[in-house]
Image (cartoon, rainbow, N blue to C red; front, side):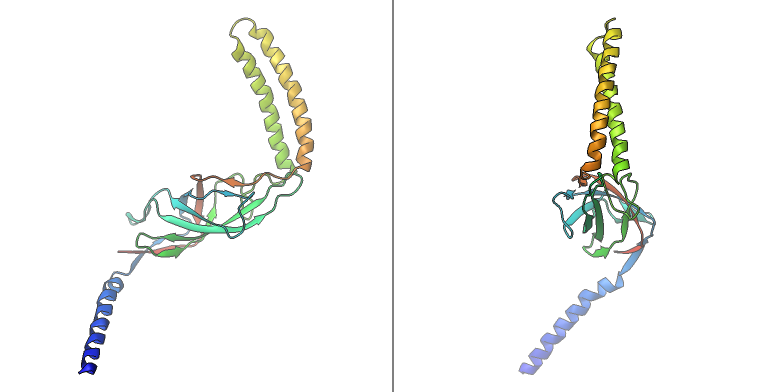
Length: 224
C-alpha cells in the first residue's frame, strides 16, 4: 500500500514538472540584436578613480527601447550591470588615470541575464584601447591651459562691457583687456610649469551621466 502511495506521489510530481516546463520550451523564441547596435546607458552608480577600485560593481539602465522587427525586446529602463575592469594610476606630466569598464550583462524583461560585449564611443576623452581619461599627457594639459588662459582675457573684456554701457566703456574695456592679458600671461606661465609637475586629474563619471556604447557581439534575447 505504501509503495502504491509513493508511486502515485512521484507520478504527480513528475507530471507537474513536465507541465510547468512544457510552456517554456514551446515558447523559447529569441530575437537578435546585431553587433554594431548603439545603446545609450544612464549611469546609476557614480565612479571616481580617486576612490573606486578594480572590481567595483556599477549599474546603468537603457535610455531607449531596443527593437527587433518593430517589437520591443529590451525596453527602456532595462538594467545593465558591470564592474571596473582596470584603473591605470595617474602620473606626473599631467597624465591622467585611465578607467576601463566591463559591461557584464543586461537583465531581460523575463529576468534572464544575458552576457554583453560593449565598447564606449563618442567621447573625446577615450584612449585608443577604450579607456576613459582626463588628460593624455603634458601636451594635452598644455592645450587646456591655453584654452583657459584665453578665457581669462575674454572674461575680463566682457566684464568691462558689463560694468557700464556709457561712453566710459571705451576707457574701461581697454583697461580690462590689458589687465586680462597681464593675468593671462601669469596664469599661462604658472600653469604651464605646474602641468609638468602635477598628476593628472581623476576620472569622474557622475550618476545619471549618459554613456554611449556600441554592441561588439550580437545578443539573442528570449521573447514570449
